[in-house]
Image 1 (spheres, rainbow, N blue to C red):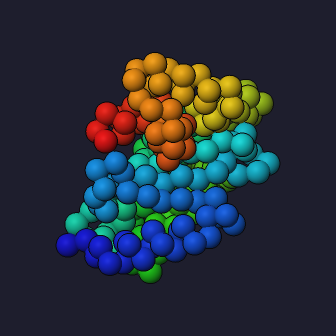
Image 2: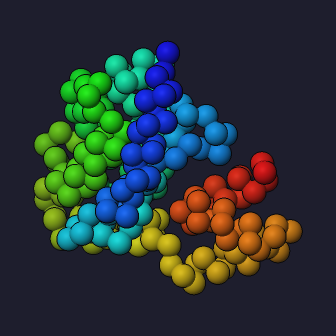
Length: 195
């Protein structure tokens, strides 16, 4: 059985220093503590800088003795992350997991992976080849994907608010929901429809 008291404590720990780390973890819209959404900022000095990446987290029944299952919900161009499914190739999410680790340390490790790709142990062979053979194109593509999928531009937010308000949702509710889901219009719509 999942240790929900521990999960609750981990969520509180994350929200305590979100200002410092930028890392957030919160329950998905169904409120279950077994299905969470993590948010990490793209590391400074990388093609992911300025992006906000959402990571789907599912806790197996054996958590914390089994690693959490994590995959990127935000599309990302990286040798160790599948550009198709968002699957992450990271040892602590597999055989190097320890119950002493937390969701926050796992997300910090994922963030560190964005800074230091391991193209020799790829999750996405195409991206790894590009990283090794044509680094400039890799950086350009990674930056473009960050701009396209991980950045919430202020103009974009207004357009999304407008669209959702036209669907009949109250503006204040639309704005707060968009904020909660990191500007993801589809997630916001799901949340608005279910509330």
